[in-house]
Amino acid sequence: MKKTVGLFAAGALVVALSACSTGATPAGSGGAAGGAPNKALDQIVVGFAQVGAESGWRTANTKDIQDSFKEAGIQLKFSDAQQKQENQISAIRSYIQQNVDYIAFSPVVQTGWDAVLGEAKAAGIPVILTDRAVDSKDTSLYITFLGSDFVKEGKEAGDWLVQQYQGKSDPVNIVQLEGTTGSAPAIDRGTGFADAIKANPNMKVVASQTGDFTRAGGKQVMEAMLKSQPKIDVVFAQNDDMGLGAIEAIEAAGKVPGKDIKIITVDAVHDGMQALADGKINYIVECSPLLGKQLIDIVKKLNAGESVPQRIVTDETTFTQDQAKEALPNRKY
Ligand code: GZL
Image 1: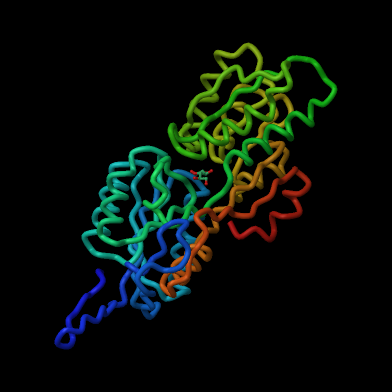
Image 2: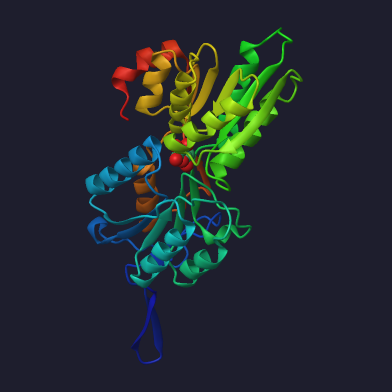
């Protein structure tokens, strides 16, 4: 929807702003540009281009977004890109064609978004990043990035490991199961983890490979690492699903996960927390998929002509085995 400029009286130019999305606040500028859309909530249409359905985290994220929009009475157009960037780009282009009021998406990888985000900007449709970031230098291409601090998550995983081996100097051979290649969580969790352990020369990442955030991928990569690595002490899986796949491979190799090989993961979805409570995983860093309500809040603020911060970091915590046993009964996902 564009601003509607109309000539209402001889010589008088009155700008009539239709209830449209051009009142959005360019990132970091504060205040609405051109007046608030102020649409009735049930008239607002948001196009959401989801990454896929690759993990328990993604399933929970999708459910939370869909439930939040239903509860808010805001129209949601939803697409699943099956972890392919070209599908997400097509979905965004389709939302532009449909002239939605806002576009939200979780970029499957960090790079390659400037062109399509430029098209959304030219169409006057504000873009909200959820979950994952883009590496665009032009921050006017999106209004805000709502999601976790992945570097912090990686660091928290590494810090826990360093603490476990405090005062010991024996070699600690670590294998890392990376998330989707080129994705913000894979890049940043790897950076945070490496930073956390770098002061300990006895701790070495002896192998690191992507399992694409899937259980099957984690199992496949772990099977290969068990064959190629003479000794593995620790697995750092960048999400629960790859960690659960690694457990299957470790047990198939006749070893005890959580004891013979320690496992640290990220997410804290139900199956991961169950494995943690059962002692098969040793530590989980939470990454909350429950972004729906915050996304709705951003849409409502923009519709009211209010500005939103360019970066909104989600709250999350960490879990030991005992904490998982306590938390499990009340977990939403
Ligand atoms: C993190 C999210 C990641 C999860 C994985 O915010 O993008 O993608 O950690 C998911 O489980 O597949």
